[in-house]
Length: 230
Picture (cartoon, rainbow, N blue to C red):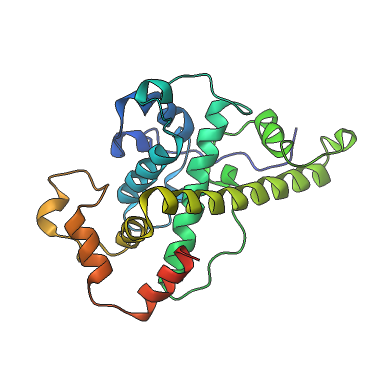
């Protein structure tokens, strides 16, 4: 229907095996992450990034009733799998922007189209997401102009979702924990080595959080903190 490039072949192993979490959410996680290519991880430690994404994803999608409710297939919106997938995509945007700022670079201004990294979004699913907010001219469907407009709206939606998730994570977990976990994605050397192979990467221990936040300060840490807590 649209002229978006077809996804490139990807490795058969997905992130689920390297990002364990709440067992009741495993099926939702696999459905939301199947098809993502390793190139979606712009970091030297892809496994750690996937572990962080799952850790934060669970904090965003888990429902008050507990794991049983969170695992229920019926959820509001244009398909629960699409909502879960977009949350994963938004977390990638958040971590990429944070790490850019922490490296002294400007945060990417535009959220990428998640389909470029293999996110399995069908045409009807993309339309459902976009039409929650914007009206599209059905008479233009099938044209290159329509495909470009649709991709732009999807990226705008992802940009807003990433900002919303940043606020929700900071509100639920506190800026100190969120900052320390994001910072650790590129600064594993600031963690206690003895703990790295004995427990899951996330959540960070209280000692690791304190070490990162209270350790040697620097302009990069200050800039990243201001960006995260703005």
